[in-house]
Length: 343
Length: 210
Image (cartoon, rainbow over all chains, first blue to last red; front, side):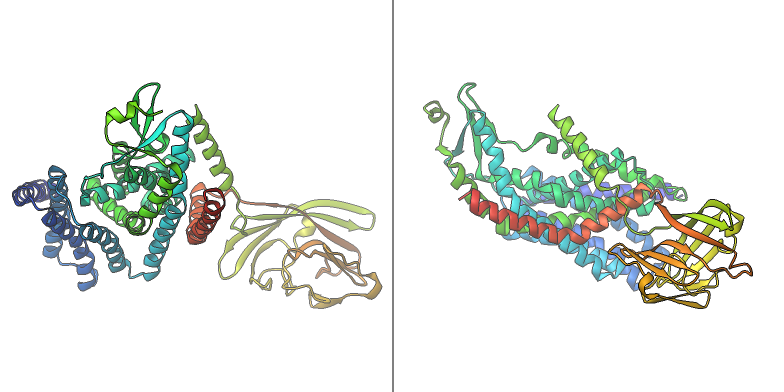
């Protein structure tokens, strides 16, 4: 009965929402509309905790059914459609304001979501303080780490060059979402790796909370090695030119760190959520609980990364870029022919 | 190879960092070495003070294999100031705890005072000597070092028991608890650590990267 409800009603609504919204967004070819759809999808997440308060924790059955349609079909449909549509039109740029609005929503919606569920203002303050501490570490170390990283290339005999023409690539809100969720999944990937070293069992809701909190700490002390350094190096657009091999390569961040990010991290995160949900023996539909755990976990993790990303973009990025360019003094080149004349 | 070494090093450092419990915990066992003298007869045994629970009151189980320690063995409920709420021992203060080092101490309704020149007092140890008793405490943590206990028995004058602090056995804390503790500490100090990192980075930039 329940199975057929999800398979025959909720899942088709998700597919229909995804397809139709993607088609509409493709036709509209507007990145602003993409942002609006994304923000709408994200914002709808707070409906459930809001109704929970309105009904005093006893939501009527019909409303619960409607919430299932909303949480499992409409919201993921809208969010995925806006991301797919945006990926199809990556070249269409966005104003900085729109990108900042997306980041602000990624901070505000999860905080509101948790506040409505828990009513615990101290939890929000804790999340904000850890997020702020995360940015402070980024602000303090990213430029130094990026500089030391570039110096390694110079020591190996490479010449550091910079493309003299302005980078005309436009930002999309997907870039920021990618930065945020690369870090979120990276945090979980590292945390589960550490937990597996110590043979910590992943069982129970309490353990999933510990896991999320451990991930905050991991992000706090190690995220600086991944996103901000890579972001900074991409922003200054440096390349390492090796005269002996005639090779021009991007300056990459530490590969060992990158191993913990990417698609494998997403896969391990999904498996972990399923594993955690499976530990609740009384729950028959493990995947449904896994979905809830995923939403809760992502809500807990997102502000811890989105706030540093926002502050780094607004405050740190340009300063750090000047710091790197001032110290490295890369040679400006506008084409491959100029590279051959470099000494 | 370097990557593997880094991973091993990080794992070892994490293990060291997460394996240092400090607080008094449920299951902590304070072991005393007891000496019993009755005329020329001398016997020895161990007395264990095990923390059973830590709530508003501390519950302590006193156990020993020696028959001559049964006057003290059993379950005690003790306030955090060391006052006995429930338990067999008739003294006001539980033997392991003293709220402060005072010039006098009450045991079994008798007040024992410093007795002038006989007092030995040093940085580590405070010794109380009376006509019939000698009680000494490790000053640092007010832990009883040795005790000549006056008993609530008739032949008190004929024998004496001395307890000498032997060791503290800390309970094995589950790894999950250690993880939680470490996370709590790091969460609590996250902003402070970040500010220290920022201060160091500013100094490094001003001195090394002009």
